[in-house]
Image 1 (tube, rainbow, N blue to C red):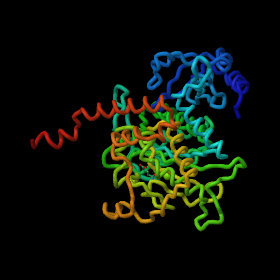
Image 2 (image 1 turned 135 degrees about the horizontal axis):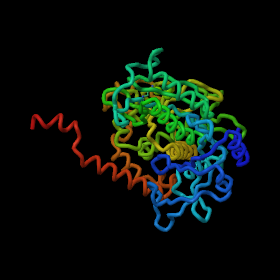
Image 3 (image 1 turned 180 degrees about the vertical axis):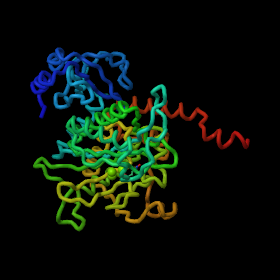
Image 4 (image 1 turned 60 degrees about the horizontal axis):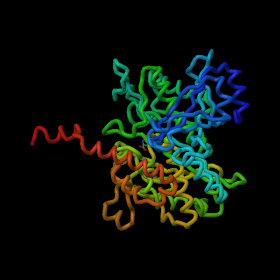
Length: 443
Ligand code: GLN
Ligand code: MG
Ligand code: MG
Ligand code: MG
């Protein structure tokens, strides 16, 4: 396994790597990347690679446009779809200021900061995500469409289906890059798929999510398809989520969510962590569900959560505690979607959970019946709140949140809200197809 600079330099020679794509993500979780020749890598490890931060979404600071990327050797991966002669690899880095200090708007730094806080309390965080996506056709010009690539449904087995072949290619490529695939299946909607890879510490998983999206899109494209992580590309069928299974480990490597001596074998720590997530989710929904489109997924009828409840097994809850106990004891947060910036999403989840632990936040009773069947009045009587109904509602919640501000830092907080408000204003001002369909012929 590759961990140090020396390991990387050795792998570069061994695999005849000619170019390295250095990568980081902007505020929105979009990969920024440029290639350096492998001869320059040694120096890049020691001195970093300079770039102009003023052209990166959310990074601008007039006085600090010179920035530096410090490659993290443990993220070195050879891209399996490039030629093996003169191979291409990628490496993820940390963004620094020219004086060597971390750039506080770097999403990877923000997650590291949250992890350090957990470490101070004696915990490390594991995350296992479940990313769903659609495979659509490209048009003649190579642009994405929403044309279906299959008519399959959940767990359908279709041996002659091209889309299944593409998914298998994606699995192979991911395995080549060190992912351990735990499940790969067709999802409920036509042309929708899910691939789950093994959980890791939160930082590795966030890096993996970025890599995953990149690999899925690249392989789909090589087969003439388009993969999208847009949360709700089609009206009337399920959208795509990114359930986040999370747990905390002690320094001794024990899962601290597990307690064999309570009736449901969940520890108080797990309960308080859940309480913290429930308490703060409205404030950080703009991060886990970052787009206008995200909120079109969070509607009744499509297995996506709306109400802020937890349960042992009920899939209509925002938080589900799968029945596994022991090492695999975990809390599954079901609202995040795969368009989110995973570094920021994991940082805010973790901080919310830690806040719950510090304040011994009671998550209340588990809600075991289907919440969607309750009337609004019943829900109100039970004190059940809902997730924000739109990006606008989510941004306004976030804007008033000291908790999110503290977790992501002032710089990112302000930039994020500014960008999202712009996005909302642009959306709001436009005339949508629905309005034309509904009003044009009758008014
Ligand atoms: N696609 C659903 C969502 O939006 C999840 C479906 C499932 O995995 N059971 O979250
Ligand atoms: Mg799943
Ligand atoms: Mg699923
Ligand atoms: Mg799940």
